[in-house]
Length: 182
Image 1 (cartoon, rainbow, N blue to C red):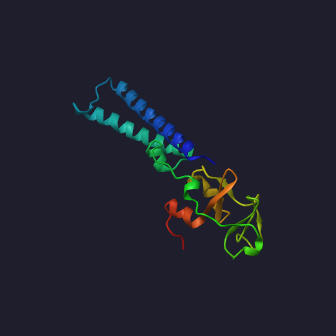
Image 2: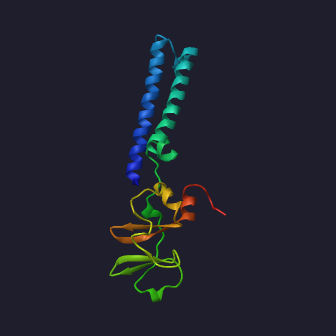
């Protein structure tokens, strides 16, 4: 799973590569027509419009190919990495931690011993060991969690062994733009 920083870099590199390919294709079209194309401040002609159309088509196709190759969200790609999804640590909601099973009240909680998580209560009928629970680091981008939500209703977020919180499937879908699921 990639961090927000890695997604930003991937989006910027993919965007710049698509831009370079589009400009190269437009330049080759310009050379093909012996530099007769005008598409700018000085006016325009059909050869210039053809050069502009070649740029737009090649740039669009290159963006599509880059998005499939580097698997970044559209907003990250189209803004060249300026806009990226938030990290899991920023999205996670706090979660109670308990030291004894007797104090469990029936909702989701992390059972700890000496500050170290042992398991999760409330996820299933029995305690789920911490090693089997879906856990991600706090700096992972939220958009990278979709594969975990196919199998699990929640994902736990940790930072240096400390439990930061939990992200529910409903919260994830709201963040990704799917709205409420019935």
